[in-house]
Length: 131
Picture 1 (tube, helix red, strand yellow):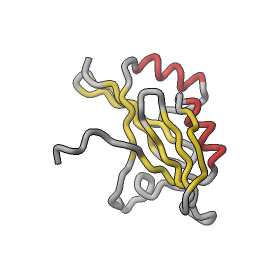
Picture 2 (cartoon, rainbow, N blue to C red):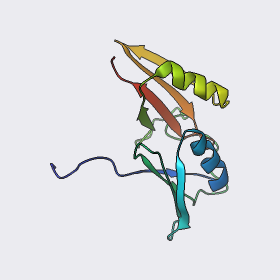
Picture 3 (cartoon, helix red, strand yellow):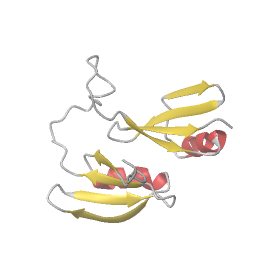
Picture 4 (cartoon, one colour):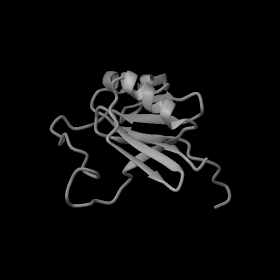
């Protein structure tokens, strides 16, 4: 479909808006509004235009593990979001200063990508493409 121009937003189900908001503000996202709607949803956006909708209806008794990434049975579904970056070393230093641990780093043919987890276990990839 040629009419598709970009990803409009990513939806993440979270347990606590205040905790999620604080984490994503550390990454440079700005709170736009919410909760709103029947789910309900809150919205944050990065100055580069990436928009995240936090779905605020997680079950209180939900497993603390990420069912798509941490279980031996591999379920279908979106496993992570990837944020493209320009300077991997600078981002790694910033994450370290914020106390956000990197769970895995991969280098492949000049590209670098590394992963972190948000407070709900959602996986975020920082991706620096080939230089």
